[in-house]
Image (cartoon, rainbow, N blue to C red):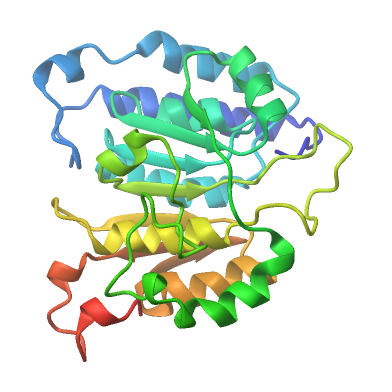
Length: 282
């Protein structure tokens, strides 16, 4: 994440968000998406929440998202946590997201091996996996135009694990990603700021496949509730275009700064839509 200048207001705001999470986990009167057992509610890792509070209260590095953007996600987490939370990208805000979902399952996916090791060295208790993608930003236009010509990318055939024919399908992720239904997704910044590479370059993997795959999993959801998806950097062409193509304007329920919030229902609850919902994304 971007190293922003230190300000008293920024660290106080970050610390306040984590402190709010501590209060959140103390309440039994919340809406839970994963229906935790009594034992999980009484064994929440308060030391980790305290660690996060101290980290952000004393750090000169703050999360890339603004307070308003983080607050948009936090408002949903207050209602849904503890839940199954999937985050694309590791960064300076990873500890914060982990703390805000105390008692839930939070998994991070990071494609850069060096950055993966750097973040895990400082926060070894995070559940994170190094993953590889089959796409590059330079191919974004080609992928956008060509997915409809590939049968295994079509909505009625779409699946992820082992789907090598559809290049937008994340086909080789850790099994835990396919085995769970994810209630909450966030697309963080693919972080190259610690290295000599530019931030946004042609050979970077981009978020094209991750955006497509989020919709595939959200459509197939069988559990209660919808899937909340938060996409950052929608000021960039690729994020905005692929979000409109696969996450759909009609499912967008919030927008703050460079962040869009989508709430996607599964196919089983799209009966009031025009046409066969199994044969379309939007």
